Length: 356
Ligand code: GDP
Image (tube, rainbow, N blue to C red; front, side):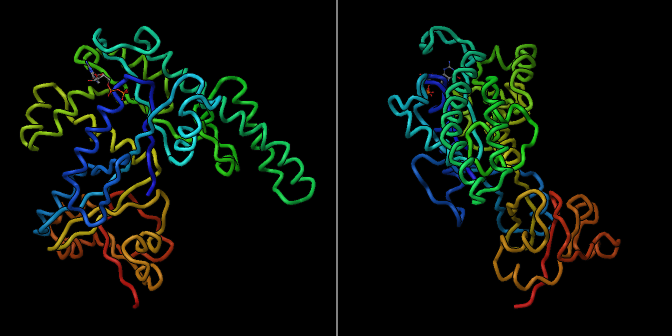
């Protein structure tokens, strides 16, 4: 599964956030596909559509999609020089598919800040700089090798061009994901700063209410997504029963838990989307990549579904709920029969037909 690596300077609240994520996972532990690993938190992707489907179909259980977070401890200034845990840290980041940086905004004077005072902008820059330096080192080694290989016709000239373009951008102090512009072949170079970024600003009550501060930080990290949450509050929230948690959120003036927001943003940042299946046994969300076709989507349920794919009966979630049942949706002409070239849309409710 695709993973999101959680990084950040010491004392910003990473462990607090990660512990909250793993507590949220305990509730998900009865999922058939859940494996518990110490540094991985697999959290359910909140999806109110599933509850609605379970009502329509009288499903016994609900299985949401999940998002996996990996705790990557240990970034410090100088990580790119291999200091301390530097090398291990960089290796762990390379394995992640997206990076979530936790940045401290909360002001608690009892919690020491590594560089003396709370300054999210500096914290973001420190980590970006380490990753940029590490990528530049990678490219310094890769470019001469690629030059030779291109001359010997063993490598694509486009790959060399991508490496050179990436180097030029990084030398200006920008990360590659910040650039936004798509560089062809970039992914093949496996650079860290080309991975999508999410910023979690660990905030206190004052910060959660300070929209001007939030707008400023949002603008600073754009086009990456910014999430504002109180890690301590989130870690208390996951200990509560759903009803109590909802009440506590409402008291706090929040519509959605920070962790839920993080799961949702993380899922989309990874380029994922879900489609839904429903029946008396379960209402379930299945994870696919954006742009996948119907047979690829069927393959997530079972490889035989993909191999023997004939067609898919697709009803959009809204149409199905409006009609009240599959039969009524069919009668209203809302059930579409789609073939092997159909590109799945988020929230499609699907039944596959296949040969065995
Ligand atoms: P890490 O080093 O980044 O993993 O940070 P920790 O999660 O260990 O947090 C460092 C300290 O800050 C701990 O004493 C936490 O209790 C405290 N802390 C974490 N999040 C918050 C927060 O949102 N508000 C306040 N006031 N303290 C926090």
